[in-house]
Structure formats: C-alpha cells, structure tokens
Amino acid sequence: MRPRQKQLLYAGLTAILILIWIFYSADDLQTTAVLAGTVRAATLLALGAMCGMIGERSGVVNIGIEGQFLLSAFAAFTITSMTGSLFMGTLAGVGMGLIMGWLLAAMAVGLKVDQIIAGTVLNISALGLTSFFYDRSRSLGIGKYTNIDLGPLADLPLVGTVFFSRPPLTYLTMALLVVVHIALFRS
Image (cartoon, rainbow, N blue to C red; front, top):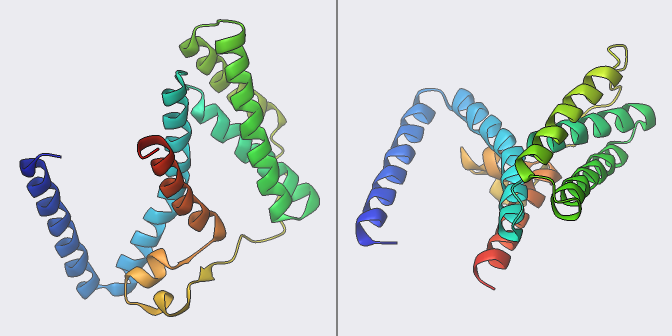
C-alpha cells in the first residue's frame, strides 16, 4: 500500500471512530444496538464474500451465491423446525451449501456450461424451489443460538457487546476470515 493510500485509510478510520464516539455519547444503547446489528449482518455477508473469493481464486465465477444462501437458509429452517435442533439445522444449511457448490462445479467444470449461466440457473432454481416448498404454517418453536461472552472483554463499553458477546457462528466467521486470508495471500 502506498503512503498516500495509508494516510487516506487512517483518516477515514479516524473519522468513522470519531462519529461512532459522538453517537455513542449521545445514545449509547441505540449506538450499541445498531453496531451489533451491523456485525450480525456482516457475518453472513462475510461468509458469502469468502465463498466468492475462494471460487474466484480457483477459476470459477460463482454467480449462484445468492441461490446458495437461499437454499441453505431454507434447509436450515426446515430441518430446525422438524427436529427442534439448531445444530442439526445449521448442519443442514452447511450441507445444502456444499451441494449447491458441487452443482455449480459439476455444471461449470464438468459439463463446460458457461459459469454465468450455471450460476443464474442455480439462483432461479433456488428461488423456485424455496417458493414452492415454503409452508407458512411451519414455525420455529425454538429460539436462536445464545451469545457467548468472552470474559471481561464482553464488559467493555461499546465494543464489548458488539464484538465480544456474539453467537458461535460470528466467532467462527471471524476465525475463518483470518484463516482464508492467510491461506490465500500468505501461503
């Protein structure tokens, strides 16, 4: 990174931190809730971004990430509502993501289908399948994964609740970000 880029990066980060501090001083609960929601949403986006990045590095353009998300969420919801187990639902979602990735690879690499077309087919298929099989009467009778507090770090003002009192999937995503970065750019 060039010195000018570093200066702009540091200036931008400083401005963001100052704004967060101003908002936190005005209404700490609201600011913490907004930042915690941002981390919650960013967890899923980071997983999708890693999926796309690994696919790109292997030479496959994965346009079907949205379809993978959709069918994985549907499988997780369905299995969780049928079994009452969040863990089984999570495994079903991961398994469906693996199946969708395999389908994309089979079409793009094995059958030599254009990668954009294959991804679009997966997206449209996922939308159609989930719409067709969705049952409005089915509901989850159980809650969600509980937050895991990381000791005294969870008690820090602002950043404690935002980063150190999260569900297990968030911590797993943070660890995966580091592992994928090292695997792709440092090995």
